[in-house]
Length: 366
Ligand code: ATP
Image 1 (cartoon, helix red, strand yellow):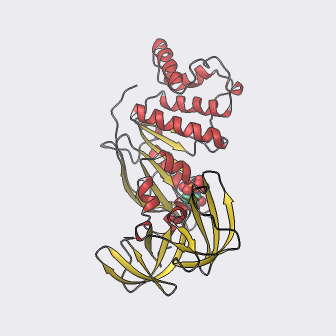
Image 2: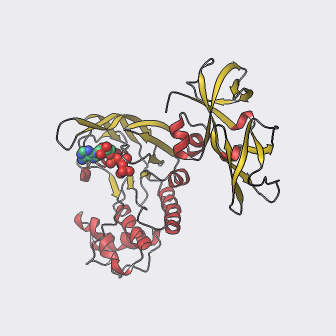
Image 3: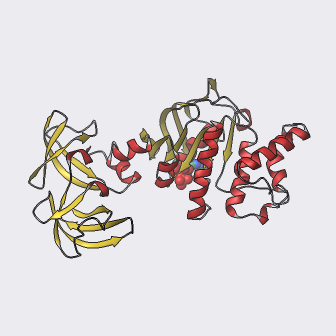
């Protein structure tokens, strides 16, 4: 099954659709421009309607771009039909043939390609073993669980040894536990085969846990591309910050920038910040972003933002405290609640943070 890994390149790709009345254009994808490196798993993440599926369908060849070019490796494939591209697509619905056995479902793509019988048998057995279904070849799909059916669908995509595997929300029909297992499985197989993969999801946990890099999209535009760590720790906008994780946002005035430290005013107090998006200027109003785990609760009057504990939610490994402040409700995550002082519901408290755990974002960029 070994094959050389290839890159996927989108060069200023735009896709416009006519609206239902066939009049105005809907710009589903707007000037997308990025390279997926050989063997990389890249997730397209964003809210419903942001253009993820359209991007994937253009890479697969089910949609043609209005503008721009697409390359798989060095080959331009922009106008090629799906069967002329070295890709395989796995959809949300399994699309298995109910009257065929698991073996025949997986063999189908090879039979179409007129591959000799013996080789088909060898490859089907190898691929079924790869997805953990070695002894299921004779079963009918209806006699399998949802997760097993999804494995058959994965085997069917992989058997044709595509250079690029395209996955469109493949796990959304599964329950939470199975989804987690399959996510790990897909990632393991993708790494093992060194196959380049593009994965569409609107689930941030899925994107964060699966990907080498995540492309965050909104309204047809790419808002940020980065590793899961980069988009979580260093989002470039309030939208990305809020979409990839929980965050509190506080309005600040940026006073000074000196030796990597931004001096800001927050509710009349001076606060220091060590991290900032590129488009924040001294003298401007900005937004200070803080993740729940980067905030601390201290005695009233001792921190930077005053508040009152509204509710403590005990989660075993951590505790979530919801604090009412004049900036709205702020979530603070307390790791190992047994080791730390827990402030009671109704108590007046103060929220504190260190300069290296919070980040400045441009105020006008939503
Ligand atoms: P979801 O998570 O809901 O699948 P998505 O991010 O995958 O959303 P797309 O399906 O790519 O979004 O759609 C992007 C935009 O393009 C949407 O406004 C959608 O209504 C529009 N669109 C998609 N396909 C067509 C089509 N065939 N004709 C007209 N408009 C379309």
